[in-house]
Length: 386
Image (tube, rainbow, N blue to C red; front, side, top):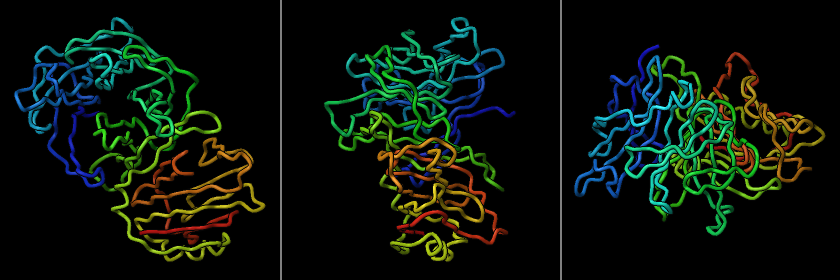
């Protein structure tokens, strides 16, 4: 396996990206693994200069013996980086008797005026705190997660007076609870809201208050045939906490900026499965397509949409299975659901009922299968855009 470096890309709308040169290369501490970056507006680290707050990255360096946490900073918006001379800043192998200690996620905790790092260590996520991004103190640990942590606060139903903290892991499971700057206390067990190819998703911190969104981008572990790179980044989505029949739950829905990619094509209503399938045949060979459909089951307990034999959407109402994962609509006796399907050249992303559940996968449509688009077991109301 080759050495890992930290890449760098920038965007003004999260849809169109400009790739920049590699940010960090391997050094004596090891090869570059993932982490996170913050803007040190108050120059707590001392890395900044007047009028130039430092962008500070916390990242994992991996070597055959151990994984350690390091710091680097930039004074030109991430174009060039300087590594901290006293790296590493955390070496916790002795504490945990494990090499697995990686993926620092750092943010500013305003109530206590300190930095917080969530770090995956052995069997879960540890919390560290710091006043200067260089000296870190261990505070607490939550078991039950693996890799790429995230921790953030969200209002419930948009109400600023009712907020919950969400702790997140690479496999897209999460806990809801409280956080006092040092310790996360879960209120319930773990839940999931997104499945399939997505892994190690991360959110942006410190989005301007006037915007207020919590935006996440996930890694899609999807093969890219004939491309000089592995895998891809999925659509950016806004995360919200909403009251459900089971309590507050995470929703994930594509950011409004994705509408820049759409051109209206056509709209149909009140179609049978067969008629909806016939109408969609004109789009069988489209390499990019957006479909929004409300599907209503008739007598069938199994329904969905396929393309050239690949099931893009598969809902088994009898076992409450949606694309291979358990899904229970807010109305437990509901005979319908809303699906938004984003087809790209190599991927498919599906968002159900406004983001209550989402699924991503490699697009494996086989053009030798003559079926093209095919609905089964449903009545459909559909909108389609190229």
